[in-house]
Length: 177
Image (cartoon, rainbow, N blue to C red; front, side, top):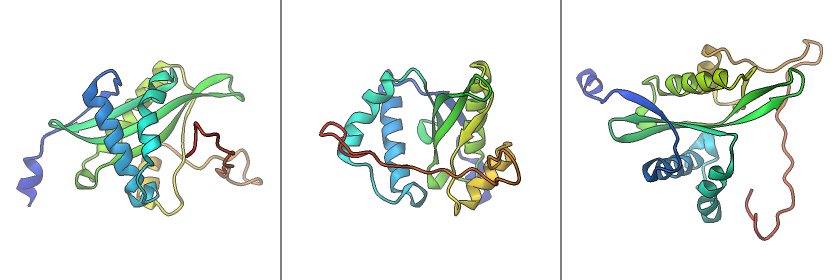
């Protein structure tokens, strides 16, 4: 079986270019696959989201995505967005989605993706990178810790910051946030 792993094509990463049909298709396919994964919630994206995601991403100047390829096959994706730290008065990079297809996990793909986002964040003058991770996703937590991520705290007395959300009423145009 080890010889089979050695026969795998090397991994390369590329910045997402949504003007390239192959990249657009890969982003949509991997995002859909991530949504169906246990760590993505277990349900596919609604068709209305699938039809909107690429046009909406193309509008966003703060979007930065990275794809990982094994030969011609796209096997990993990170979607990130530039934000702003008011406490440091500098941009930050928020990593929103990290996904590697199940058959390719364990090859260091997330490391390559994270390294590329960090390079871009530094090039943009970002003061930090942020992400969210599920409490039960211990493997991802180990990977993120290896890359220097840690739970956000301002002081030990106040504890860790918690990620909360509030869904907003949806208009007819945006029916499935």
